[in-house]
Each structure stands twice: as C-alpha cells, then as structure tokens.
Length: 455
Image (tube, rainbow, N blue to C red; front, side, top):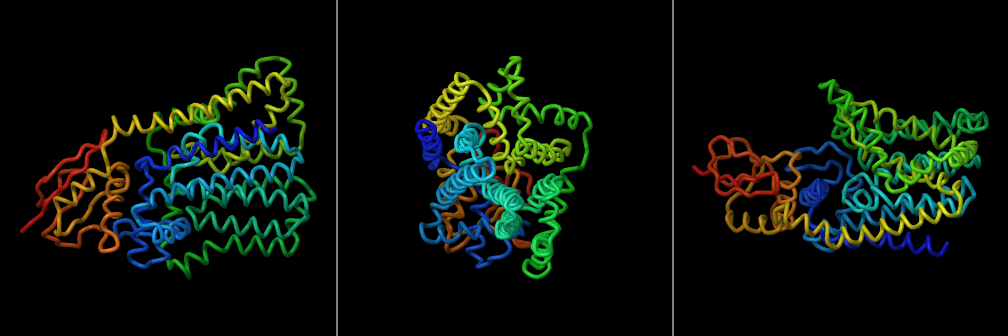
C-alpha cells in the first residue's frame, strides 16, 4: 500500500513539470475572458474581445482574485495551479466515494492510480481548461446522489445538487444530462425510488432543475442559456455521413487509448480463459453493474452524436477508473504487480515528457508567443490595437492573451469599433478590407498578421 501511495503522490507532483510551459491549446480562452471581466468590472457575463462568450462565469470568478493578487502576467500559472488542485480534489473525492460505496480501501487507491495514469496524467489533469472543474462538479453530483440513496441521506443529496448547479455555472447544461443518466439507472432499485420520490428530495431536485432557467431569466438576463442549448443541438447536426461513420467506428478505440496502459493490459489478459471467468465473477457485484450501466448510458449520446470529442467524457473518468480498478483487483497477485509496474513506467514517462518532451515540441514546432507579443507592442507603440480574430486559432489567441497581460490594467484587446479607420489589427487572415500587412508571424501551422489601417 505504501508503494501505491508513493506512486500516486509522484503522479500528482509530475504536474509541476508543466506549470511553466507556454500556452497550450485553448488555455488562453479563460485567461482572456477573466482579464476582460476584471478590466470591465463585469462579474456575470464573460466576454472575449468585448463580445459575449456565452458561458457562465464561475471558473473566471475563481481565477480573477488570484490574477489581481499575483499579477496578470501570472494568470496562466494561476489557472494551471487551480487545475492541479481540482485534479487533486477529484482524486480525493474518488477515493472517498469508493470507500463509502464499496468499502474497499485497496480499490480506492487503485482507482485513484488508474485515474492518474492515462489521459488525465498527460493532458487533462493539468491543462487550464474548464473541463477539470466541470468534471469534478458532475462527478461529485453523481457520487453524492449514489451515496445519498444508499444511506438515505438528504444532506448528501442536497450537496450533490449544489454541485450539479455549480457544474452549470462552470461551463454547460450537459452536467444535467450526466446526472439524469445516473438518476435513471439508480431508479431501478425500489428502495432508491422510494427515497428519491419523497417530498423533500423531490423539492430539492425541482430547485436544481429550475436553477438554470432562473439564472437565465433573472441573473444573466439572457446572456447564458440559449447559446449553450444551441451548442448542444449543433453536436447532433449530421453534415458528412462518411465522416460520421468513421467517428462512430473510432470512438471506442479513442476511449481505449486514453486509458492505456491499463486498458491494454486488461484486454490482453481478457483473452486468457481463466481471466475471463474472473471478470464474469466480478460483474456479479451489484455496484459494478450499476457503475457500468451509468457509464454506458452516459457514453451513448457522445458516441452517437456527430460532433463530439472523447474529452467530453471526462466527468465519467472517475467512474471508469473504478471499473478498471475493480477489474485489476480480480486478477492474481502477479498480474496486479504487473499493473503496478505499468503505473511506475507511465509516471517515469510523464516526467520525461514534462521536462523534455513538451519543451522540445514548443521550441521546434511552435512560435515564441512571448517574443511575438512583445514585438507587436513595440511596433504598435501608442497607436490603437484591435483584433478581429475568432476563437478557432489557438496559437493566435495565445499571443493575444499575452498582449492582454502586458496591456492591463490600462487597456485590453477588443474588436474595432464600427467605421474605425486608424490603428492596427491582429488577424489570422491577411484579407481585411482597407488594410496593409505590417508583419506576418508564423505559429507552427498557423499564422498571425499585424495589419495597419491608417487614414
């Protein structure tokens, strides 16, 4: 057990190797929206370049005080440290959930290690996206719902529903879909139905269900809600039948890859007849059956929807880790030791990637965002600087986030006012009417243009 605790601690500490990396992916989205909220003193509606971003503000509200205190030049580091604490909190909650439901300390530790051994270890556990916090709240809602029905505890139910509402305030309405899937599966137990349909639990659930509507009508005044609904609807829009068939076919394989090496080990051992028998015996556990049903039902819409990504399953990651952990513990002692060796290898690899892999990639395949931002501001000097960039070019918005860090608290990048005829524009395309190209910056496979527009 001491070895497992040590491996878990090393896995969490490995995130320190990537805290100081330049912006990755779309990390700049939440740093930009946080800086704009602070600059405009707007606490309800996040904006990006002065335009409503269409997401609720909870993650921004968590980030802004630290940006003020430590300085906006450290906002990326602040957001990553916040993600690190969120991931650590998810690990602790996962272990508490397993101990409470399964009463199995070894399973709790194995589940935590598996959670920290694949996609979470290398990407999702440290990237400054909304997904880790969003997932923590959804997992907490499902875990507390499950424990509440097992122990007939209304306080746990209430805490779970608060967490569900917090998931909406973090990112999207889809937390309610995950919760509904778990709720539906738990209803198959008669004693669970009796508890959930009592007056007080029903009132609590009604309040949680109405919360997004009340927020939309009274607090955000239409700023959040309709855009999130349309975002969900857009995921089911079928435009290319061939691409859809390929996506449906590859989706399970993609999920499998995100749980390597344990998923590969279990698949390999599954072909052993004796291991198959052990797996069938483990499935007789009623909680494992419930867990598999919750995972399967909640995976289905993301598997079948044309426009989805496996990272959207992150709220289910802790539950998947429990299933995999239970499968490992049904194996013999020699195979369990093999799993521990694999955990160790992945953690060593993570330190290597964090200390040398990511920096090498940034140096050779990405531009120097800091240097580019400094160069742009040295050219612009005191002239007005605007952006017409959208949010689908991650390197470009990374540069703009650094520019915002340097401009605050005096100014911030926004879209140009109508009929603006002077100043500089940042754009991902050179074809902007009445402008000339001042300078072009190469950002890996992308480009950023500094355009000038003077009378």
